Structures are given as C-alpha cells and as structure tokens.
Image (cartoon, rainbow, N blue to C red; front, side):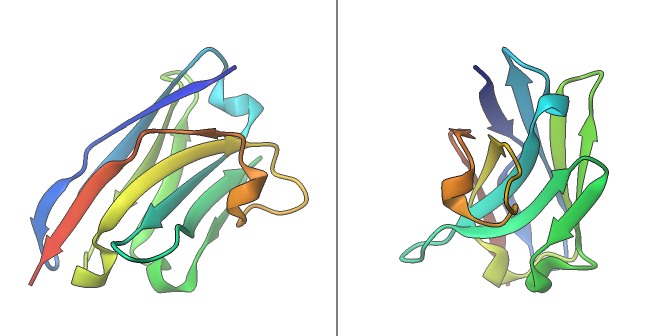
Length: 122
C-alpha cells in the first residue's frame, strides 16, 4: 500500500554530514509510524530512529547527532546525520508500520525501502 525509495547515501569523511531521504508513494507518510534502521556488514539490522505522531525516538548511539523529520507535503521522511563516525557505516533503510506496541522492532514494520549505503572513512 506504500512504496518507499531511499536516496542520499554516499562516502563521507569522519565528522561530516549526510541527509538521507525516503520518498513515499501510494499512501501518505502521515498514516504511518516511520522508522530508520541500519545494517552493517556482518551485523543484524538495528533500530536508529522513528517518528510516531509528534514523538521521536533514537537509539543511544545517535542521540544528539541524528535527526528524523517528516515533510508531509512532500510525502518524504528524512534522516539528517551529523558528526558521522566510522561506526555509522552501514546500509540504511526506511520503514513504515503501525507504531504499535512500540517503534524499535524490525518485525513491527510492514514496508521497507531498498536501502542506501553510507560509508564513513577515518
């Protein structure tokens, strides 16, 4: 019912910034809780950030550096990433789900983007 397409990944030096975008079609992003996850090589996909109603949630490792936001008029969700570290290197995915009973679990999201690679060099 909703399709998600990510963009904005790339190669950046440690301390730099990137802004990821997730463009939705088929349904409004305002109808869903929207989340960002990442998967590093050899690791499980992990929660990064989510927005449900007006509330935002972040994993501890990105608090103060990353910001999730929506532009409902553009039907797009963003992840602004500042002060990037090599440990942030991963494929980043956006996802849409009901936001119940919580927002951090992979299995609670029904729709996923294709992922975009973020590589942070030292």
